Image (cartoon, rainbow, N blue to C red; front, side, top):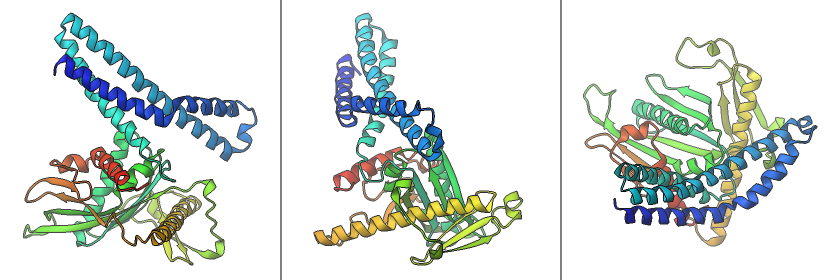
Length: 369
């Protein structure tokens, strides 16, 4: 790559970063940070722990956003100087280093640009993800377990905290279902594009004749509820059952009836949690999951009403959204965006950013949130 090429690519990144800065408006965020910092300094802030947690969390999130934006701006400016010096001194090593930094900087700016496309009502929320095995028997259960590991690895790669609320294990292999939370701002906005039916084609490891098998798993993604959502669930509307947790044997969690199943009688929704060791903790976690599902139901009903008013009864998303093919060739392809890679192993190990970014951009082009 020539110096002119490097400078042209850097100029393009500079323009993209400028557009991001115009959207995120770091100056106004600095004002919010100052106001929140003043609230944190008030001695009696922690008299109301819920409010204090909300204030400190928002302050931390805003500060991280501004710091990230300022750091990218510094890197753009530093790289411009690095390229100039490398050209003046005809330093091939410095040019190689500038090229590597340009590539890394491009990836980081693109990741931040995706955040600016997440403007939906709940996009800034944490995500609640449920995976279910569907058609395909034991292969589908195994596929569901592969997807669970894939999303947890994706979160781990980014340093996003996760909490698994419930796993229902299948008899032979894999899982029937699992529910977990990704506790990171904008996790819902990013992962919501993963919702739908996932399809796996491979030679079944559970077929002694070595035949090719197609199996399916469903992924649901909900925003985690907050105190401001006002999802009121009267005690009379729920039935709470306790049972012994299940899992691959030998775990201490299996020795008491601490798992909780909550049935919401008006809607028929059923949620369960067995991750915590106490019944009270499991009930609280299950109620949070139920609140998220009721919130999503209300949002979906509202959207359906709007589509009916607009005369749009169809769903542009469809159901089946991605295919993972391991035989007779190797490929993972998104059926909406046409984004594809030829290395399924890396995808199952959590390398999902390309698919998520393409999904967010596709949704915006379709006029989605």
